[in-house]
Image 1 (cartoon, helix red, strand yellow):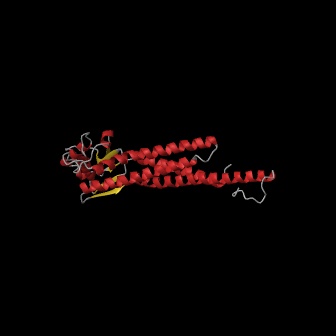
Image 2 (tube, rainbow, N blue to C red):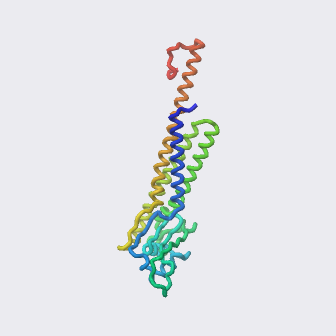
Image 3 (cartoon, rainbow, N blue to C red):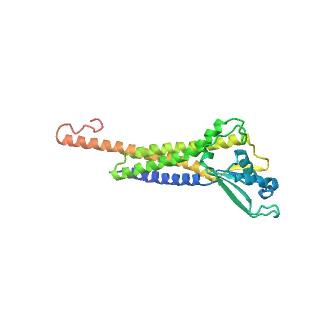
Length: 269
């Protein structure tokens, strides 16, 4: 038997969990974590600039090469891909055009675990451990977060099948851990971007800002915490009231059998 308060709390927690999962998945799969805006990207694709964006799509492009291209060509960066905006026809014999297209290159698995250097692009400058581990964590943490939430949902389904609310505590704990992972992801990404811009400062005509994919991850974390709080509260409070009700019933039966006086309070029994 479940009180309406607990049923309502569980429904709200499930909705919050679903929304946070959708936000996290959308954030993970899109490329607008950070955006660069230049004044005139079409004019930047000159003979010198064209070689830069051609190196951008190369598998051998290092961090400095593709970051310079992102600065010049209205680039966007996600957890999995980097994109630049270029004219559709950028041949030497073609006049400048305003018809633009977006080219994206995926980070390979080796790119995700590649060492970052103290001077980006200079392999002889030594390994920058802070940026290296921040980059790796921002790749791993969203998968851990989604995995914890899916495992929590599986426990919740098992609890429904068993008609017991108590396993919802485990669901709440897993959602809390998922929220910590999401919060850690956001922190790692912000720290990584700030450290990168200290190494490679933005040009004067370039403006950088966090995109809507990053905002989705920021919103997902508090939703996970709220869902966790509701799951844990509903499970613990319902179990406590069930224990008190059971104690009252035992006291009532013992009173009827004459073992204890009727005035005995079930909480003290």
